[in-house]
Length: 351
Image 1: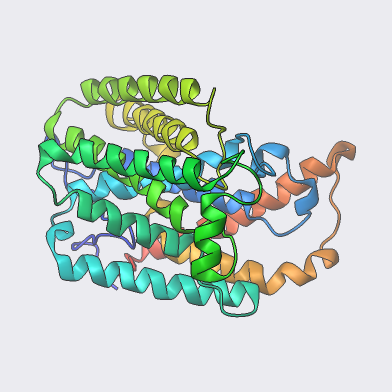
Image 2 (image 1 turned 90 degrees about the vertical axis):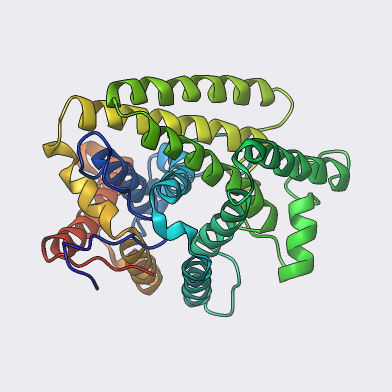
């Protein structure tokens, strides 16, 4: 635990440094992290899951839904914060953070699945974080080329190892590699982790703009411009590579990097430029201890998942989807109460 004066780097995502133009934290970054946690909690609601609004669920295979945008957004914030934190330059701290995330993730996944399970969200974060850190140790002028090389290499692996349909439900490069390493395919597997490091690296490149561009209105415009070309390129790429979160396909990688830039630009404009702070306070509180909230609620979900049939069926105005949404909002509200309690007591858990 740390005191308010220390304001530590948070688990898996270093806290932003004081902004050059105001001497204060970039509040929009904390709020964006909180937004990612809100949607991840809402989509993870364990009650009446079969009736959740479709946009809070993930597609069976190809396609994109609203809920798909927010784990990439969290990884993007990891990248932005890496650039803003001096602690990222310390190899010992980087390896310690990644190792603890990995161990915590394996423990959480194994608890959730009732047996040893090596892959999961926290392991995914740890792997993408380490790969991005290695790339960011290269000379600055070479980093975009290295990132592009990783992107192209994984794409090539899918094409070479995937047979007639490199993006099918079975038989892809991701299935083959995960089957060899773990004995089963995982949506948080090896190639997905490698490709999602591009999301973290992209966030780090945006983080450099945060440091350089003192005028926050200009920064919002710059980040918005990146969002536009990334989304446009992703939609062109989607003509030949399906958008697929479960494989973290190249088109999904670029599209969600673009949407993450868009969310960040919007929050910079609303919070840091227009000074609309009050509505963002709950998001900032959730974003202050994201891993604690995530781990706590995934653990709680594992404990209550077999009790879902005991929860009353809600159907306001005859809509079970509305009832499932109410459960999701209640799930988020409980998370926020915990986050607010910690925030008000200056409790910031870090690894």
